[in-house]
Image 1 (cartoon, one colour):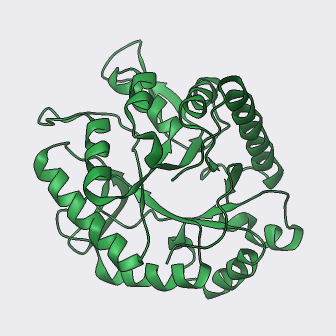
Image 2 (cartoon, helix red, strand yellow):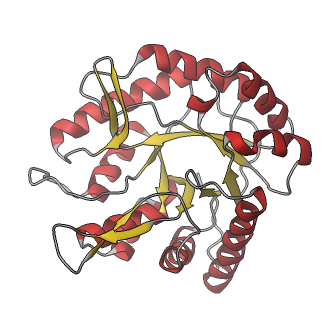
Length: 291
C-alpha cells in the first residue's frame, strides 16, 4: 500500500552512503530524503540506520537496478527483495528509469536507451504493470538522459511516456536536468517537451549536475553528460522554474552521485531549489498538488 504520509512539495536530497551516519547523527534540516535501495539490500547495518531515519524523514526509493525495459523480463528475485525493502521503509514514492540494464542473468551497471516503438511500448507497459502489482503501489518512471536516438523509433520520447501513463496508470518522475541534457544532445526544444508531458502524472522532479565534453563526432561541438558530479547549471534552474510554473510545485530531488560533496553543499542546493520553486509558483499561481 502507498505510504500514508503527506507528500512534501519542497526539495529533498539524495542520501548516499558516505553521508548516512552523519545524517543519523545530525538530523539535517531537510524535509525528505531519497535513496537507492541497491545500496542497502546487501548492507544490514545501513538498512538499520535508514529505518531509523525513516522515523524522522519521509523517504523516497529510487531504484537503479529494476530494468523495466529489458527484453528478458524483470528480475523477479530483485523485485521480491524490493518489495520487502519497501515494506520495511514505507517510502512516499518508488521510482526507476525508462531504460534497460540487464540481459538474461547479466547486469550491465548502466541505464541503456530504448527505441520508441509499439513493440517497446507493449513490453515496457507489461513489465510496469508487473512491477506495480508486485509492489502494491504506483511506480514513477524517469525520463532518461540521451546521447543518441534510434532511427527506428516511431514516436517521440514524450509521446512514449504519455502512452505508458495512459496504459498503466504509472506516474512520472520528470528529471528536468535530463530533459535539458537530452534536448541539447538530440536537438529538440526542452520547453516543448515539458509542455507535452501529462502534468497531473508528474509526482516528483529531479535536478542534477551535468558536464560538457567535446563531441568527438562533431568537431567544435559539445555533448552534455549526465554526471551528477557538480552543482545544478543555470540552464537547468531556468527549465526547472518553467516546469514549476506549468505543473506546480512537486517534491524535487537534488541528485549528486559522483565527486560527492559535503552534506551542507547538498542542503544549499535544496534551499536554492525551494527558492526557485517558490518564485516560479508565485509568479504564475501554479500551486497544484500531484494527483
